[in-house]
Image (cartoon, rainbow, N blue to C red; front, side):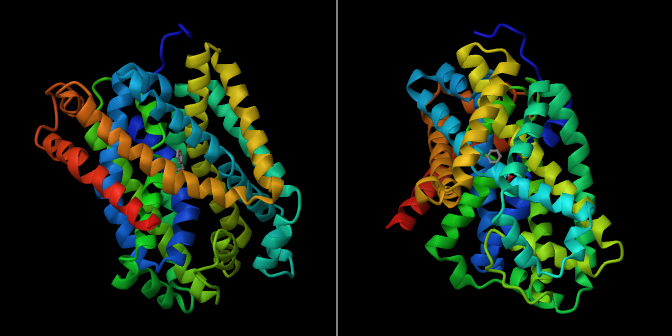
Length: 436
Ligand code: PHE
């Protein structure tokens, strides 16, 4: 076992920024707009919001409790609480592996878009943005950019928790918020933007109650909040004992919602203004955004800044699932941090290559995404709720939520009630309903 003293994050703000850094990433900026676009816009937003409140926040709190209490990697943490539940930690490790199989590739797309903004290629080409995207996909570049992204993540994670992860998040998160707001204002002046607002803000309830919409929105809540796969367990293992988990989870969730809504307010008006379809799918953000920049003075500069921030937001997320694996290899196999990070990096490169080449003709990209967001994370979250309230010693959750009686007294019973009855049953219900 690794005997070095365990690192911890600094003050309250650091903890929020680091956890929000994990949460806010491609989930809010890329996945949310394209999935919302496919599932009715406003209807999806509404169900997503409810999922964050009723499912996301309670699961996040349960994970915080497990991580902070045990101060171990995902597998070690569940095992320390109860040997019978260590499989939940392994399911988290599996989730981190599957996400590593495709997330870096998409993060790599933003790297390519950043580079072609800086070189000016993006705006000097005579091809449409859709054609440019397809051309890029048909080349080797996505794999190269994906690997570059893995190496950037490796660099930060191997530097450690305080120097690498914490410092990076503190700068990147505020910058991202500012530029998104500027873009939302700019987009409002594009011709035809109003159609986008009505798509994103006026709700078709029939769409909202469809089993598939609900399932996708719940999956989005899990994915976007990074819960249900041991990531928040791992991060909480670096929290100080006196951290107020309830306020941390609220802040992280509100920030994630805020960025998702802002992303929608930027993308949808631009989609309609440029005559594109909101149902475009995974390329939506990448074919729409250049349209916004095109008409702006200093297009290349804005575009470069924006994609730089997408890179940074993705980086604070890739760091977090890299860390799940790095902490696992370090603590469970007794490797030093650098070696553990190296093993994780190598595995990530192999998995990304498998996805890139669609080995055996399988669409790993969508498969990995679907399995993690819609199956593994919701089930992981459901069992985590069940474990902390039904199988731990009495008062475990209450002690953790109140810091042994020091804070948030009124809120703790509400969370515990949700964890006991509402959240797991709801996840199960949505799950069964969708698969029937
Ligand atoms: N929440 C991250 C995002 O939205 C993705 C992620 C999922 C990160 C699971 C860690 C664990 O981009």
